[in-house]
Image (cartoon, rainbow, N blue to C red; front, side, top):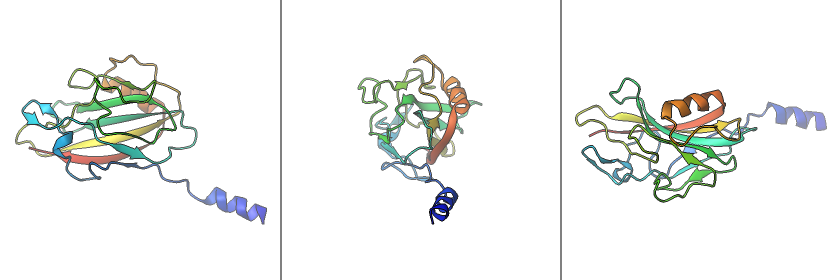
Length: 177
C-alpha cells in the first residue's frame, strides 16, 4: 500500500505556478489607474496589485517584470523591474512600484525602467498605435539574489533572470489610445 501511495504521489503533477491581479485579468484592458501619467497619458501610474501561487520547488528568490514587446523601439519597453523578492512572498500590493514610498519587502530592488528612473511606469503607447501588450511576469529563481546594481537596465536584469530561472508565471493585458 505504501508503494502504491508513493507511486501515485510521484505521478501527480505539481501545482501550477500562476499569477493573478485584482486590477485586470489575462487578455483584458489595463485600467486608467495603472496607466502612465506623462507623455500625453493622464493615468494614475499606480502599479497593479499582484498575487501568485507557490513557486516551483527550489525557488530561492523571485522577481516581477512588466514588459511591452510592441513598443516602437526595436527592443520593447521595460515598465517595471523588481528583483530579490523573498521566495515566500505571494504578491505585491497596488502601488508597490512607487519608488518614493517603499513598500517592497526588505532586500527587494526596483531597477531602472525605460522611462529612466526605477519604479513602476505604466502603459502609454503612442496615440493611434494599435493596443500594446503588457506582459506581467513573476520569475522563480534558483539564486538568493541577483548581483546587480539598482541602476541595472531591464535588459541586463532580464538576461540574469533567464540565466537563473526555475519557472515563471505570466498574464498579458493590453492598452491602447
